[in-house]
Length: 204
Ligand code: IMP
Ligand code: MG
Image (cartoon, rainbow, N blue to C red; front, top):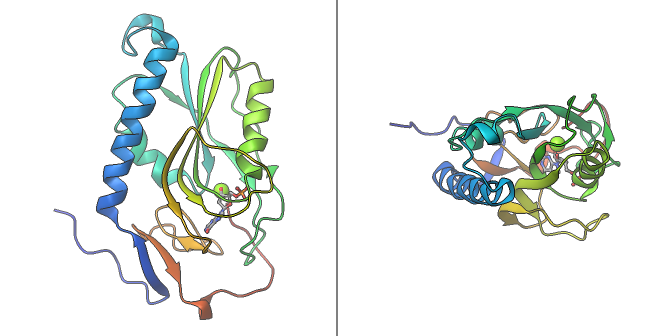
């Protein structure tokens, strides 16, 4: 039995609760498994599939989404973490994405699924899609839990998306504001008084 979410007095409104998230994550896992099976044209649990599928979560935001998603996938896969930085500090608009870690090694010939918490300007996802394609991956798919209804800086459509949300800054389920609220289990907005319009540290 799952208890009530922790209370954060800074939370304004829950947009997507944990039950809906869990249902949607399961659906997305099914769709990904189905498509990878088609792509590899073998049973994903067969020896021929072994070592060929790599999930690349973008840290830190995709951490909780990834943890839930991969546990719905009933076949052998590996994880290769990558970090991208784009939201310096208390800012709530992207300042342009850049790699903040090395790419996972040995993506050549692999079937890669990039995972992120949210698609906003599109810069993060397109940067990684390009970089991983250049590594010689056999296929590259993109999967986000949330997609913000905004005009993208880079026009990219994820292969899988959980929910469309309005153009609001959200936290929870891995998403942060100034490093906090990642552990809030639902997708929520913050009270406007919490959000500074200024600068300093980092999101991810
Ligand atoms: P993009 O490069 O603008 O598409 O931004 C994607 C990244 O920005 C995501 O990986 C998130 O880490 C972060 N991000 C975008 N919107 C939000 C938000 O509303 N809350 C928290 N993080 C966000
Ligand atoms: Mg991020």
